[in-house]
Length: 418
Figure 1 (cartoon, rainbow, N blue to C red):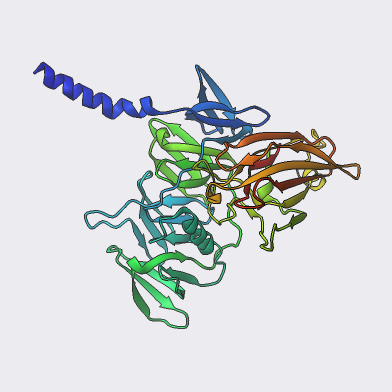
Figure 2 (cartoon, rainbow, N blue to C red):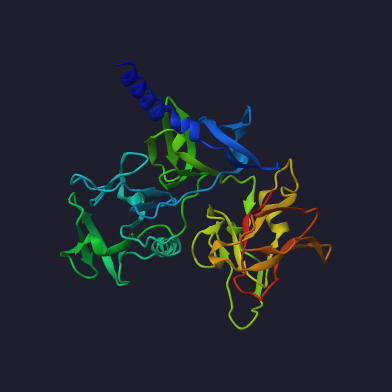
């Protein structure tokens, strides 16, 4: 009998305490501070986050946060994308209960980490149903669907074909989509298993902006205005005004501030871009994407913000315009340094070697402010920081190193002005 009690006690301990025991500290980046490893242990309605750093609990205001940890992806589940850019991962259907229903006015979905959610259809931007289980191809499809700014809905099939019209409903059975083709009033039935994704027209071209990006362990990515954890439950208000209440703090695996205290270069338009091919293949730079069109990925970790370029390249940004845009009576110039991590993207296939350089234009003279050693594929991201002084422009340069430009997929991760 004693042995049975001990076994039962062991099972209970395993069920309730292993999540705490297996939590590991993740990198925490704060404004004007070096990185440290931390665990998130609390968040309040006033935007104050609590992190455990070694044996100290530190309160961090949202504007002081750059990023904690890295977002995760879930490639074998369906997902919906909302008008603020939030991505909700759907639970897999079981016992005949489908995870997604859409009517003329309402969307009802069952998620992995946040339970059942109902919201107006107007909050929906796109759906991925049978998307590729490849991160790059999936991201490309997601971007293609989000970019649909037409008046009509559009269905993308798994074979690449598309249809334009109006989605009528996805019913309880979930196996059939009812869709009105352009110029018709009678709905046709389409098999769900042949649909890769659906985009919804008549939506604003620009996404609603939030103050905080939240990543969950199920792969969901949320653009939110607030996050509160109390009484064992999460309360999240999305930027598109959808309120979510479910889960617990252990499901939060990533946070990134979207406040205006820092400005990411990927949110700005470059004043000049030049690429000099080693042979004759031109490359465009990418914002918040790798050169392959997938997420920025280094060492199998995903980065939501950053720039991707191919050697040899030069990107120029006007600092004086940015300073004027965010200047306050208390601060004539808001930004005093440029900060990033530099690395070769995993999409290089293990090749690639470059040198990163930062130049500043001051008093009409271009001066070299920083040059890195040779950065090769497989190297961990290298943190860099450059004091801006009175610079009018910043120029980001990537030069060839070994073997010409083979695999020179260069990433400026979290590139920002502080």
